[in-house]
Length: 375
Image (cartoon, rainbow, N blue to C red; front, top):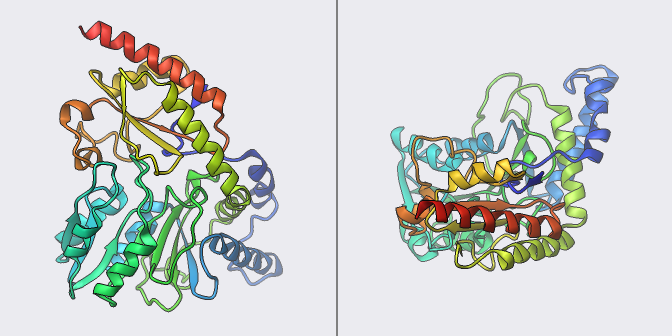
């Protein structure tokens, strides 16, 4: 099997699983308990938080709230940070942000959506036009999960703060953390991540926030996560997140270069008479989105699956919705007739050039055959 749907989820790292398994078997205690075993786990979790945080942020300026997933982290940022005036976001956000901002709009906060450029990045000039003195929050995806376009969130956050210093800036970093080398600037107030996108397990995410930023709790109860997200800590999930992140960041520059070569090889081998590229040249190397003209992407997905090649057609979190065409792809200006043929090929740090070569061969053959049948 060749697995090229890593933007949807990644396989848990075996070496990390072996180490983290002790937190399911031996170290199963409640880290909020007063006895030594529980307190020792509490200390381990505090060290894990520092490790996860230090990969992209200054520990003196930021803190980490563990959540159940990236979607929860996005919800907490929006509902706890955008309670008044207007929220500015984009037409290209993941559903975890887009749908949440729409819900905030139904609750009385004005929702404003900036347009995208053809590659899926935000039109910065148009976004800034939407920011005014009543803007409470700007939320902008770091790496577009459907095209791989990278938004320069540090520069855009600085521009937002220059226009309204009181506006909070949040970024959904689910497709960037542990993949794209970067550091958070002082203008980023909140940043979301998800563990299962880089070799850890489903069921764990995090919201990174500035320490001085006061937000309301999102889940009430026993007061865990510094009172901001109650619930007994998922020790295994947090340790998996820490270990997988540590492994990813140990070779992040090397992996970035390696996967860029994989991305380039796959695109080089795809028949340009059959495919056109939607992803930008300077986007994330971990996502290659193409349009197979004259065919349905869903049909190609199933035919590839039969041949042992697993790919995607867009955001896996939205692909089961009743709407046939991706909202994000249409926001890039792609016509309906072409949006039907979108295929997302996404990689992890372990994807090889050989797999890219085999995938290109399968895709060329299947799309060519399907187009012949359509004639």
